[in-house]
Picture 1 (spheres, rainbow, N blue to C red):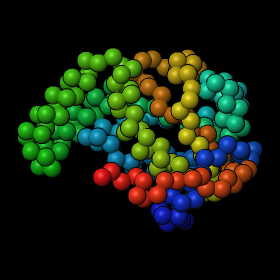
Picture 2 (picture 1 turned 60 degrees about the vertical axis):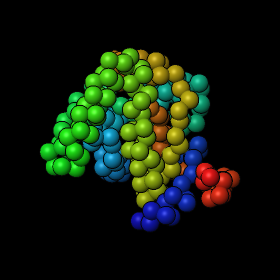
Picture 3 (picture 1 turned 60 degrees about the horizontal axis):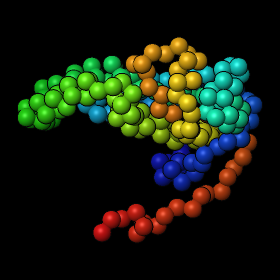
Picture 4 (picture 1 turned 135 degrees about the vertical axis):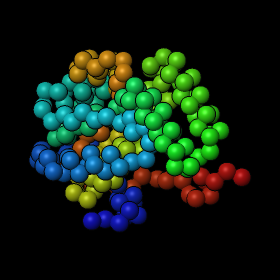
Length: 202
């Protein structure tokens, strides 16, 4: 098993996969790593659809502007947020924080007021606002995958309406990313990265 530092350094965006299927126990382990991710007010809004059949993988690739490599992955995590789950979870999570005195009553009131305001927004706008919660969980999957010799690639370029139509999802589900995953058939070199000085703000 890799140390966290090694996993971060070795992670690559993989776009060529071997056809070998990913065992279910490994898929479950990846989902469990996502389950353990932190989220605002412990709302845990992430939801995942696991796609392994070839026909649906091809439809997802088409919905992602025909990025054919997506269909070549033996498993695709369709990473989403449950908007109602986020709103309900945020309220209960904030109240729990108040009960254990992790935050004072004033902070609880401020957060609950913000949640109330968010609940009045359009569902599409809410989905965009809460996507960061799912992003943490998705990166947990991408890093944990290395423990099994798996690779993955974040995909954010897609037509969300087409993906939702594939699964007949309503407005409550917002698609955050596709994560095609499998055993790498390529080993890309590291990409250029900014220096530490470049990412600091004076």
